[in-house]
Length: 513
Image (cartoon, rainbow, N blue to C red):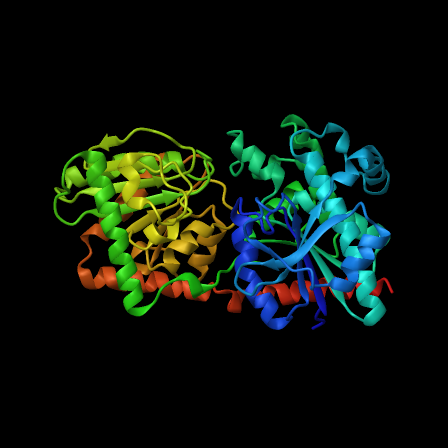
């Protein structure tokens, strides 16, 4: 297969930890750097030295290019250094303020050349589009310098999500020798349909992307994403479920599915694993006792959900109803265990709930291990990250309605914690293909549709009850099965899909001569 000599990759989340794409890129980078040492260069937005906490500047990197830019384009303000993640790839952070005065000209060009409908823009569209355009300019400049030294160097440029789509258009017009890839991690219009409470799946074949973009005021974002999908040399997405969306809503089948993997290095092993799990359970137990004002009875069962504050899409509503159903089932079956359900969702600030045999505790903060939590009852969690607490859970539950992949259940099984998810997640579908569909196998995948909410809730409750009834040996086997599933999703197994994507892009770009 054709392989790139250099890989440029851009995302709004390069050195900018705001969502799931950060996890995708920051864990994949080590595999990329291993195959292409110092030939992998990420491009991200520059928010200033105080904001880009995961970036270390190094002016010796790409020094010739930096000096050339300073002379030829003093208005281009860039910083070059290392992204401080495993693999430490080169990163270029861009300030794109110089493009604001050219915004209307850029949008006019994109309309004439690519049919991009920027006239309906609002919110973060302008900032994202100008960042994408700046990435295209900067990538083309760096490519020119590389080709002066290595005339036959094969270069791939990979743009993630609609925020970086303008880089695809720029390179297609002004630097067509670069092979381009575009990945949508979730279609903007599919997410919008789901987020607006419309039944995405029951009437899936009846939705037309352009029509729904007009109805939901998503014209510009949908337009830029759709055109990037059509003009990129290789169009990818992260799961079969989202590939179906792309074909229906963007009128463009993907060239290849590139599923999300992870690097296992942050999961402790051996005695360190047992120590960390013990510390986590003590913190979870102490927090519950402080919230309840009493000691817990016996050995508690800890269940968790985590993620962004998307009430329906992330299944937070289903989780809470399932905890109520679990309490009722425990009462009917006379299961005398204390169940503590942790809802770790930033900005979701609700009081402690009592639901039968289940206590729900809200942790409405981002657990970065550095910021002191203001709630005095959560002080036992101070200095601990989400991963520090995840390792202590008995179960996790992520009953998502809209989830193109699903890093949270994958992270859970990586920490040997069995998880419950749904058939509407990319990870859930993949786990079933790997033979894991029931909680005893490490992952329970519950069928979810637009019309079976009660079934979903009751099945989650039954799955949790089944797990609690397992003896210690079977619980240990379920935890080991969860870890085995995670092992199959490591980047060393999934990176092959990216090799194929680079080959597809290079084959198409080389055919242009």
